[in-house]
Length: 266
Image (cartoon, rainbow, N blue to C red):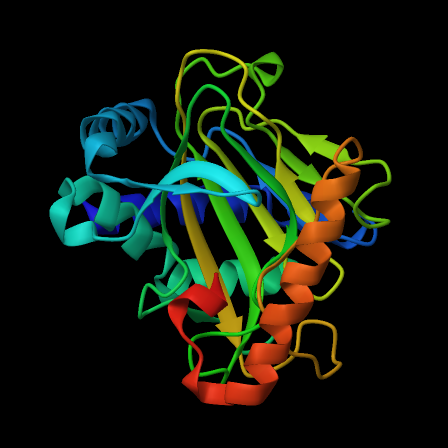
């Protein structure tokens, strides 16, 4: 099943290679592209059904920063979910995406440090943030965020959409709808502020997240930071709290260096 998924995804990327490359290069301060109808309807149905079946196995992450369900224990889930991630991690797919993005030395998240399932129901959200700059031992930069949306008949008006903040939080965002069977590939660097809008319907918006790492910095500069959150435009007090939260956790990273915990990472 994994090999067939690789073929489908590779063929789709190859067919639209030049268009995707142009889209990525011209997308502005936060580089991204998206590709619709990524896989066949038969695989989509299997993935969507498996995700719904396994939502009860996910755990809650709820704070001022975010409110959603996540899961990383692929051995506990249906095989199709791990097969999809294995396909995204395959050398063939990585080579194609490297060609599109012109990023060198891309490697899969083989330790599953940052990959996983994410489900957001009514009232769930993810505040503006920068992803953690590195992998667990800080030997490689996080370069690309790959988001695959798999909730059938999802509409942009439901919320739960990816938001990019090219000029930073508290400004104006660009919305990328989390439409079913859409793959979004976004460059992650020290300026790629992004969020997920609040879900406003009684339905789950499901996403399979993956990341690529590299020993090369995605913007050629040397930087190091934890996942850093901010408030939305209407959250002035929350924004102040989250800015201090990020400063504190970045300070801990500098003090403890490689002895940081998963809590600090998140």
